[in-house]
Length: 74
Image (spheres, rainbow, N blue to C red):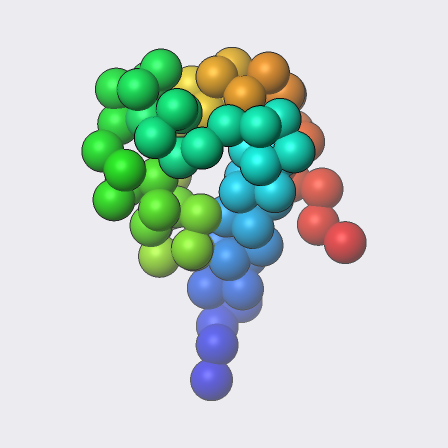
C-alpha cells in the first residue's frame, strides 16, 4: 500500500517533470544548469527522493517557474 508521503512525493515529481517538459528542457539540460546528477533528478521526478527546498529552488529557477508551481496538485 502506498503511503501518504509516497503519494505526495510522486505528485511533486510528476509536476516537476511536466513543467520541465512543457518548457522544453530535458533532464540533462536541467542537470547541466544546476550541476546535478541525472540519476538524482530522475529519482526526484519519480518520487523516490525527497528534494531539499534549495534543490527545488534550483530546479524551478532553471526551468523558469516558481517553486510554488510544483505544489499545484490536482
